[in-house]
Structure formats: C-alpha cells, structure tokens
Picture 1: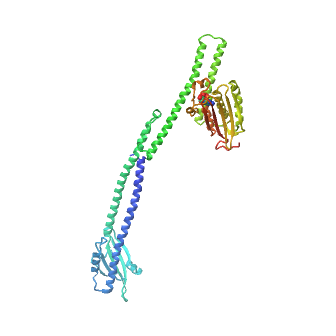
Picture 2: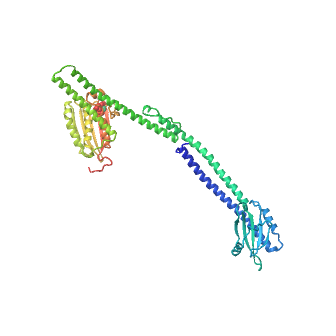
Picture 3: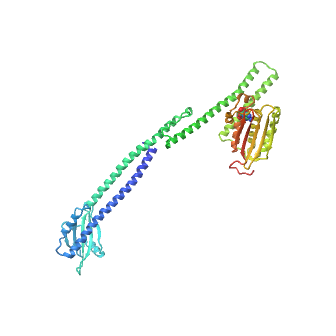
Length: 476
Ligand SMILES: Nc1ncnc2c1ncn2[C@@H]1O[C@H](COP(=O)(O)OP(=O)(O)O)[C@@H](O)[C@H]1O
Ligand SMILES: [Mg+2]
C-alpha cells in the first residue's frame, strides 16, 4: 500500500469523515438514551415516594410499605428495574419503616438526612459503584397538624439500567466500527477503480518519447474528467510533435543551406589547386570564395538571431524611432539596385510616424521586405512604400508588381527556409530566412503582418505596429 497515493488519501479522508459523523450520531443517541433511562428510573422513584407519602399520611400506622414497593415494581414496564425499596425516617434519621430489601448500609447518613429536610425538596443521589450502584430519592414530606416532617427514601439498583446502556454503547461502537470497515473497503475499491485509468494513463504517457511522438494516449471515456485529461495530453503531444518536427526540419534545412556554399567553395578551391594558375585566375577564385563566405556568414547570422529569439535572449533596444526616416533610408539604399533592374522604387504617402521600437531591427524589417519586392519583381516593375498612422498604430505597406504568390503557399512563406521557388530564390541570393525574421521583428514589437498577393499581379505586405508597445509608456 502506498501511503502517499491519492487512493490512500481519499479513502482515509472518507473513512475519517464518516467516522466523525457516525461517532457524533452514536454519541448523541447514547446520551439521549442514557438521559431517558435515568429519567424513567427517577420518575418511578418519585411516583413511588409520592404514593408512599400519601399512604403514610392517611393510614399511619397500618399501611404496608412492602406492598407499595411491590405494586410499583410490578407496574413498571419501561425501565429494567429488578428491585424497588422504601424507607421512612424521622427528622433524627431514625428509620420508622422500611421494606424488606432496603439496604440499611447504603441509606442516608444523618447529615444528608438533615440536608434533605432543611432544603425540603426532593433530591436524587447515586450511591455505590457497578453492581452495587443504587439510585436513591430523598423525598421530604410534611405531615398534617403538628406531626412534624419525615423523609421518604425510595431506592432502586441502577445497574440494570447501566448494564443496558453498556450493551447499547458496545453495540453502537461495534456498529460504527463495522460500518467504517465496510465503507472503507467500499471506498478503497471504488477509488481504486476510478483512479485505475489514471495509472494506466501514466504508464502510457511514459511510453511516449521524442522517438514516437506520433503515438497518442487511448481514451476510454470521452465525457469524463479522465477523457478530458487524455484529450488535453494528446493535444499537448500533438503540439510537441509539430514543434519537434519543425525543429528537425529546421536543423536539416540549416545544414543543407550551409552545405551548398561549402560544396561550391570546395569545388572552386579544388579546381584552382588542380594546376598552376595565373594571378587573375586566383583572384577570381578568391573573389568567388569570398562571396560564398559572405553568403554563409549571412545565413549563420540569421540563424543565430532566430535561435536567440526562440530562446528569448534577444532584447529590443526600445527608443523613439522615426519610421518614415527608416523607410526613406531603405529606399535610398536600394535605389541603385532597383535602377539596375529598371524598376521604380518610391515611398509614396510617407506620413511622419514616430513610434517606440528598436531602430536597427525595424530597419532590417523594411529592408527584407523591399529586398524581396525587388528580387521577386521582374525588370521594369514598380515597388512602392506607404506609411500611415492612426491613433494607436503605424501601418507600413510594401507593394510590388512582381510574380505574386499562389494562395496555398502564402501561409507558409513566414516559415524558416520556406521558399516557393527554391532554385530561383537561391539564384537570387536568398536563404528563406528573410520573412521569418520580418515576422519575428513584427511580433516582438507586438505587431502583425498580412500579405495579399495574386500570381502574376504582384504582392502587398502590410505590417501593423503599435506606436507604443503594450507595457511601455515611456515618452514618445
Ligand atoms: N514580394 C514577393 N513576391 C513574391 N514572392 C515573395 C515575395 N516576398 C517573398 N516571397 C516568397 O516568399 C519566400 C520566402 O521569402 P524570404 O523568407 O524572404 O526568403 P528568400 O527571400 O531568401 O527566398 C520567397 O522565397 C518567395 O518565394
Ligand atoms: Mg528574402
């Protein structure tokens, strides 16, 4: 038996609570019965004493005290009394009469007789112990005329009453113990049965590791708490599976992405070393190798940034940023590249927008969007930037008249290394991390990004950023 188990705890709490309730109930019943029996015995003594007083007043000296005691004992049916005795004393404690069975040794001493007479009120006493115990009533009576006072004593052994109470107590205690044992056993079985699926669940859950994340826990009952627990755990495993899968893909993509420039690099070096070459030829190889190294450098830097972002290690350096100036700088930076492709690149509708943000990351975000727009727009196309603000948000739009994207793929372009046309992207110097970084920067600023695109007609990326990130109320 595991003492820390929920089964043990629940059963113990149930048994203790039930024990408390049953004990209170049995105790109350016992006290009530005790009081009842005692009252009935006292009442018998009182009626007997009162009748004796009447007889004594009327028939003195002829009445038979033994007969009165015998009559009352016979009439008694409710209380288990085996004897009833009477005695009459004068003020000095001298016994005037007594029934045969009256035990003179246990009867009143002088002081108690005097006390009973001076108070002149009936009073009860219990004398002796166990089988010797006697219930005694002192019943003072004033006689007519100047015949003075007498004390009538009515006594009955109280052990039958106590015996029956003892039996009742034993029966109640045994009943409580049996009830608790039965209830405890029942609770142990029921709780065990209720918790068994949880044990099973724990064992099933232990079986699932990173190698078999496709497995799910079996749900026996769908509507119960356990059913809900199973579906919650299964949902969690599904999310873990997705996350593991994307992690695995990310690692595979990253290695693949780095292997390509490395293969090119090795090929170039091997070709260069195959025979003696002219200075110009070596320079050309080194220039090309340097480009591949730049490319790897870019990928590694981007990967590092995303990995740090995942680990929550990238802190934004928040400051007031003139977003319109950032856009203008980016436009100026890419002007030459666009001109080279005979594209028009302009910032139309550039409102003055100052927001709290990280200037270099916002610059990176706009650059990546404009870089894509130029890359994926054919020669002679048009790219334009729009910046507006409403009360709480800045809205940046980067539109192009490029190749556009088919609907199903639009949802995936923010995934790491995802590219609609891999070959083309690589030829254009892309690694598929640009939009993942844009997405992270927008989210880090508590913003959102949306895409509208039509294949062959161009795309529009809209980034909405709060002017002041929630939780930051520093001055604008
Ligand atoms: N303006 C755009 N027009 C058409 N396709 C785009 C545009 N911007 C991004 N894409 C698509 O989204 C993919 C992911 O973009 P990105 O993450 O920047 O990677 P990369 O530019 O390195 O290929 C691109 O490969 C391209 O297929
Ligand atoms: Mg890109």
